[in-house]
Length: 221
View 1 (cartoon, rainbow, N blue to C red):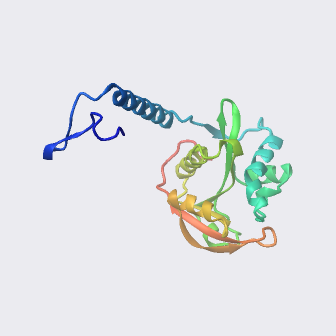
View 2: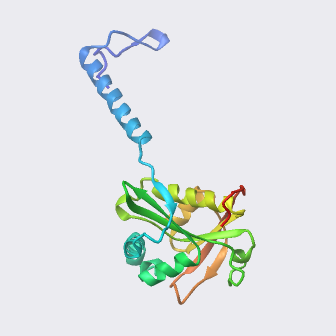
View 3: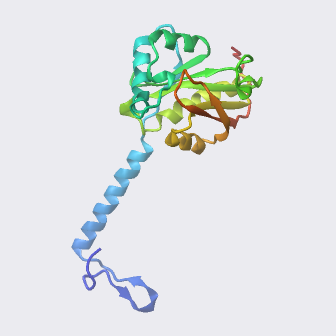
């Protein structure tokens, strides 16, 4: 803002700005407007993922690398998720037990998530509920975190689940992972309990869930 007396002054009690502004102030204002226009343009032009189901043509080694890379910060903090160390065979088994999705950016897979239907034999009551699904091996490539890609593929997967009879989505994550828990809460999930997968993990897990409005699909699977 220019110093007092350089043209951007107030007129009496009306609070009106005196015009014209001097050239220096006009240039500054123009630069500020240009900056804001550029910033808003970037905000409204964030790229969108192309989301789809996992196919037999997908590279499981690359998908496993993506998952482990995404969970590396958790491993570094001492949390042992399955995804921090899973093998390519583990990835294949987890995909086979559910429904996998990937998100592509310019033809490259940068995000993934796997849905699981209700698990009648689960030790966790929530996961046994008939219309409750859950998701896991949820990952975004480290270089693309913070761009909203996780939310995009999450919402895509939830749309699939709702179209196939799911009325509640559940998840479990490490109790010490406060940032993850806060993110899920911002997406509409509520804390509903705990579960314990040790020794497969090294932490107590929190259970979270959110209701879904079921829709109808003509392509039931």
